[in-house]
Length: 192
Ligand code: AP5
Image (tube, rainbow, N blue to C red; front, side, top):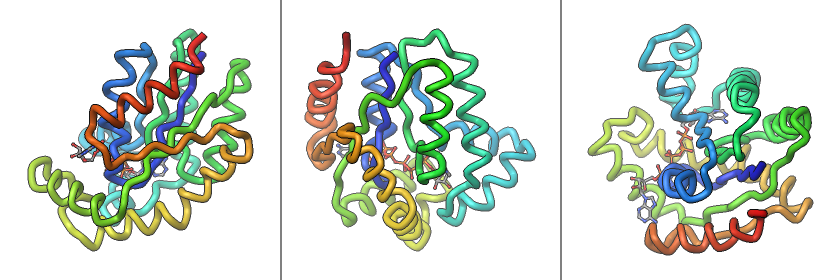
């Protein structure tokens, strides 16, 4: 298996790059944000609870996302690998992911860190909000809160992977094609 964590602040391009990478490397794209939005659209109990946090730009509780991810890994244990997009976002999630993968004798191979300046992130998300109407993109206060939550709770998680020599920074302010080219260059080193 090839397991990659696409890491970076809101609007850094994780979803955009995942779409390209799953085609090239035949991996399963696992976006916790997308899964939660499906639950919200279906107005499940989980979705209704998650929406209260997401609409404010706060994280959904660890146990909720860990359980979602665990079920999907279990269902796809014969996959070529996964792209984790938006997960893990806390130290507890990172440790839980290691345990889930270890059960299947596999591990996180690399973390790709998309670096983008805060002003660029805000512009991208406001622009997307105008078209998509995504509730957490329409208001600058919520966007700012998401970025602050990323800085305080999520960014420190990258150190966990850096210590293991698995973290690869990429300039996320280049064009989509340039970012994609840099990521696939790094990933090819891990493909057997
Ligand atoms: P999630 O859906 O994961 O949102 P996010 O992290 O805020 O990320 P985005 O989807 O906004 O950005 P992205 O990095 O994927 O960028 P994208 O490619 O879309 O999470 C939403 C919420 O769910 C969280 O706030 C939290 O409440 C909850 N949640 C999710 N996971 C959780 C977890 N593990 N634990 C707890 N809670 C969780 O691009 C953004 C825009 O920029 C697009 O318009 C795109 O076209 C554009 N763009 C992309 N690349 C470029 C480029 N190179 N140049 C110019 N424009 C670009």
